[in-house]
Image 1 (cartoon, one colour):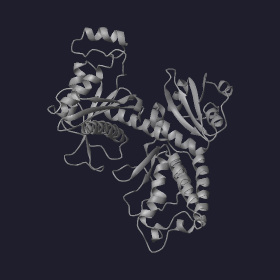
Image 2 (cartoon, helix red, strand yellow; image 1 turned 45 degrees about the vertical axis):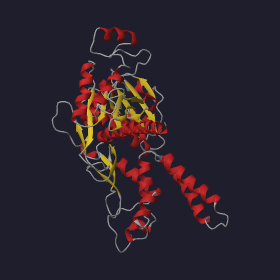
Image 3 (tube, helix red, strand yellow; image 1 turned 60 degrees about the horizontal axis):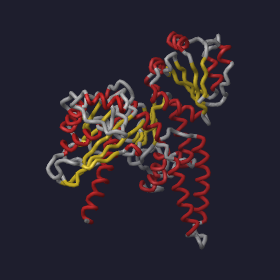
Image 4 (tube, helix red, strand yellow; image 1 turned 90 degrees about the vertical axis):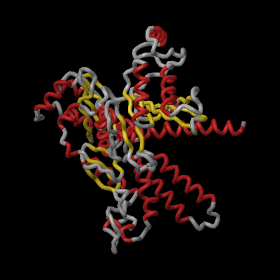
Length: 460
């Protein structure tokens, strides 16, 4: 990223070494806030255009120009990357003038219709419970450019049902012919849809590793040369794929996670985007070998170095999950100073606050911005009791599935402080994705520790 502090004049802007390559640019105000994000095929030309005498801006844009105190830019390898980067950055930062100047109808998503007889790839402006979605993009051009590049690698079909004759794209080599039964749905999912989803999720490395593994296996087991044709085809596809992926890069998994955090902050009406999220779960069998887990997400991504596990100390075989959760949270907050206090100052603070637990010296864990617990209303209330006792103002929610519903498609219920009824979010909700990931990761971590303890007990 390059940046420059500027005065608002064309001559001043010309003095900075703005590249002529594709990329994204950000305008900052005097408080260091991003107020506008845009993309360009030629960064220098686009940025200078804002200050040219011939520019005829709307009043809102003229007001924006008066507020700009700094320009920053990110160089992209291609115009399509600049388009994708713009979509991601706007969703992440929600700049004031992007929100003010935008037309909501311009926002587009890429949808993979996984529920259709023939899963296809489409551009849409609506998100419902079916399918997988990627975006949003600030303009439909970004989405169109992306799926145009994708089709050169994975020839998907947009016919929703099979028919007698193959579609037009089959005739020009851009469809495998699933529309006319040339390949099975299972084969189509394996060859086209699954790798395409990985690509849109930013898992390019996994796709390439799978290709390289198949090539290696064929080379080892191809003594009679019977698979030479397939081997050559895989090598050719891998070479072309690498070129296409390098040219048409899409949002990384990390960037998507960062977007999910922004959506979560909006949903919970948090004063800021949560930098640290902690997820908690309890695992036991009838109260025995009971353990608790704490997982940490930083900027939407798991931070496994911060994970902690707890062996329940009280009530083994007697205490219920709610009591166990309270114990885990009590012990967790013994490792943290109050907000804005160091370890020594925190010890003195706790001395004057008898309801608070003593700080464990040398182990000062950062306080979370949000707590997510696996459970229902009673588990949320248990968390709130601990937070109140510790005099901590930390947001907390609980997530659970309906009684007896444990499948991935079962609706999740979210419990909020002060709300009597739970909330059910759409399956495509980015905020729900993050909440479920924290819950599932806490569950996985707790179960793993619980099983290790059980194995040790059996061995004894």
